Image (tube, rainbow, N blue to C red; front, side, top):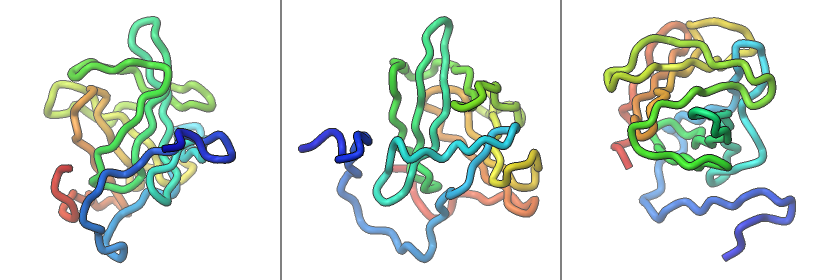
Length: 155
């Protein structure tokens, strides 16, 4: 099986599963840091969608974590950094390096950090993810309404 496509992008095979109803899934197609830089990257794809690329660091080790843009799919790929369950990471924008803003504490003891679905800081249009490796808590706010995960069971 090929590891890279003709453009040099890493190919991530999706595990075999029942195909979802594409009319009901939530796909993040726009995601920005607080400085307006896009965090959607064509460097990595999950199925037919570009992934979310986040700069990650723990101590002096730095790398990237790519996340599936399909809400409810808990797929992640680490690049240039080894991750262990339970570690807390500093997450930042891969373009400008700004540490992602805190949204609030996570129930696991980590911190929910926030990215925005518009290129401006607006907590009515945001995505919160936990900075603890292995925690799958994520939230999306759209027009100020919290969207909860009801479409998928945990994978």
